[in-house]
Length: 487
Image (cartoon, rainbow, N blue to C red):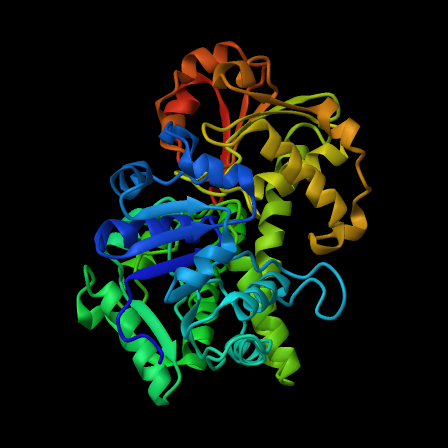
């Protein structure tokens, strides 16, 4: 029988979603054993490290949550099969990247890791289980998972019947940088399931888990298809707002308007609101672009070309914003950056995270490298290995980037010759021709900008891709500062 009460949870995938989510569930539910499993041995070792600064995911407050629950009822392991056997509820929280090959290349979600999880659950499970989609997935993926689970191999040596499975959709709505806060106090928890008896039992079991700390009025239950589509829709709407204000930032620069003033004026309208109206060099992260492209693919699959074109334009505008920022740097530096030192402040796609997936910095750097700029990077949480891996990955998957036909493939050796990663921001900024602010880290505002100015080539340019610096103060010092949407 499908469990109606859960005392043992497993999560397959110890990444940006699985790790923090399970840590908070364990913290808030000390009566539930929570085991997070991953085949990446180094990642699990980092989660188990006594030095909490080495956690593979950086999120403010996460170290405290892990310290409280780890080895009490929160465990990290590479023993996937044992975790599956013991758990009553199994979360699938693996990567679902955009396909880079085959049908749906460049748009559809690659579900191979989800399928592998489902097959492993089907092969290993000996009792009835609740399987929860936590990864962001296209509509009707649950049906594919259920088909795999229901085709679990026969067990001729066992007299017990084959296990039954109930599949739920429980999408995450976390914002990186505030993930722990979002988990502790979510706007809503969404759970989708089937309307039959097993589906209702499974949904109630998951509701009871979250009800340990989330008010019941914030726990929403829907049909499973609605839950899956709601996640894609939420990210599409948020990204649409960012692309909308970024589109207007280009007009502001041409007309002399200030995009921040425009955003504040329209944000005071209660029908619009102020959130996600901060103009910048462009959105990044693992979700927005991937989910919108997935939505575009689904619309085309169901013969809705006008709807697909509408949502695809959100991504195209984001690509345009990154290209426009890089072009502004080149144009301002007398139409060439060859041999010039450009300092990057920030590489993560936003502050308070070490996640670099789809970061604007990657694409801006790549465009400047095409002109053989010498790029010096400082980010307080992103490692040198990650930065080079990002640039080399982009070269390998050039067809997915904007204006790909205009770019030539860069040799990894050339990239490593042109890019230098620093642990000291002042070393990164020293002798630079220009500074590009790519991540809104709070510490950048507190720097000694007079000292930085004195150590730079003249004229000293600052390109504030996040509009976080005090423009008037920098102008007083002597900088030539250019922001996004600042006429």
